[in-house]
Each structure stands twice: as C-alpha cells, then as structure tokens.
Image (cartoon, rainbow, N blue to C red; front, side, top):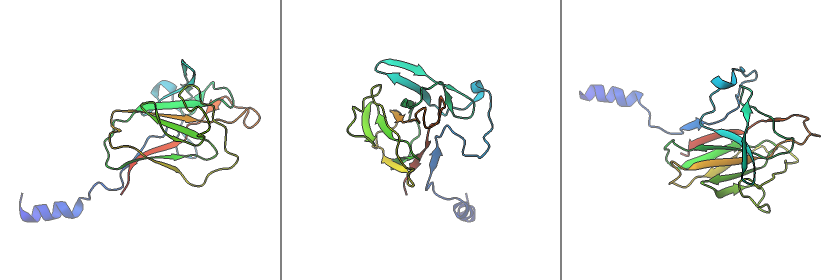
Length: 176
C-alpha cells in the first residue's frame, strides 16, 4: 500500500469509539411492526418468570412485549454476553420500574437492597415516579461469556389491568 493510499484510508477511517449495542427487546419506534412471534429477534434473551426453582418462559407477542404474566409479578430476562467491548457499561432505561441485575448469579445492582435479591425469590415494587436518568452499571472486565440476568418490576392489576411484560430498553456500550 502506498503512502497516499494509507493517508486516504486513515482520513476516512474512524477508531471504534462510543460503540453501543442495542440489546433491547422492545422497538423504539412509535408504531412498532408486530411480526409472527417465531420470526421475532429476541437478541439472545430468554424472558421468564421464576418462583424459587420453577421457571416459566414467557411468549412474545412479536413486538418485544411478553404475554401471560401476573400483574405486579417480577419477571426476568437473561442472556450470555458474547460481545467484547473495552470498558463495558450496561445502560438500562428504567422509567417507573425497579431492577435487580446479576452477572452469573452474582448481584451487581439493585434498586432494593433490603430484599432477598436471589433469582427466583425477588419481588420488586414499582417506583412512584418516572426516573429521568438511565441506570448505568459498570461490568467487570471478565464479563465476556457470563450470563446477564435482569429482574424487573411490573404494574399491578390496579395500575394497568394488563398481563403483558414490557422489558426496559437495554444498551451494552463502551465508555469513551
């Protein structure tokens, strides 16, 4: 490669800064396209409820929402972190939900430290207000290949009347 070719290549190539991977299950669009549940891209997540050792996977409606959850029931979503990023940070957009987060069953974040915070036994309440800031969680450098599990609160029957779980927007990103 000649010097001039290298100069042109460097001029139009940017280093990988500010890389972020959208791991969200829900669409960010105002009118998300609902597709057949079997064609929905779950981005490696398994969404489920768990009571002690009884785990029940939830079915998607094809837009990123999950069906047949009891109002007010905490649900979980879990995936193996296969992406390799420098200075990894997890960002969750919480709205009025509360969360507990584990990496390979080790608690790394919770909104409710007073609770048991064991996968399968946590019951998270809702916030009384919407948060304006995202939750940012620094992941350890050896996160690659580990299982990330997020527990999220849901609205009670009085608040929603719905049996649908809406996972929060999750981004796995490199901090500059």
